Structures are given as C-alpha cells and as structure tokens.
Length: 121
Image (cartoon, rainbow, N blue to C red; front, side, top):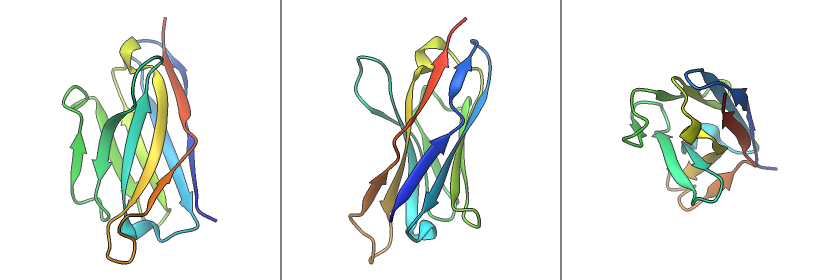
C-alpha cells in the first residue's frame, strides 16, 4: 500500500542544521510532485517547499529561501529537505506530501505521518 515515511527530525540548537528524508513506496514516485509542509504548535499547516517530478523546478516559502533546500532522488524514491541556520520559529512537525502530476494520477494526494523538529537552546 501507499506509504510515505519521514525521518531525520530531532532537537537542535539555533543555528544548527538537519536533513529530513521521506521514503516513498506503493506508487510511481516519478509521477508525483513532492512537497514539504510544516505545522508549528498552535498554528495552521503551511507549505515549506515544492519540487517537480524530475526535480527541474523548486519553490520555497519566501522566508525560508536561502536556508532550506528541497531535492529528490527518483532512483531511491526519496525526497529530502536540507535545513540550515535553524531558528526557534522553525520548530514544527514536518510532513511529506505526494501530489499526482500526470493524467493518470491527477487528484491523488498522499501524506506521511510527520517528523518533529525542535529548535531550542
């Protein structure tokens, strides 16, 4: 069955770095655009970054551009989020999302369970 499993979260000090991974299975990974979302305590879920099916185009929240980088490895069915210069306000549960980007998959939408990132001294 379809599965998205995030990993790499944890506790880091302000200014530190983390690399999140999302391993996909049960569907044709290369037919799906991939996105990272996050939800901070007491706040609404927000879009962090998006990458197209081949990795040819990426988009980021303006406040994160220059600190966060999304990438994908279609041979490994994995999407990554490199996070640098972390700030306390980056503390959130980070979710991996797969969105169908081909005619055969249009409208399909899969979610992982999330991984917690805590930025604190």
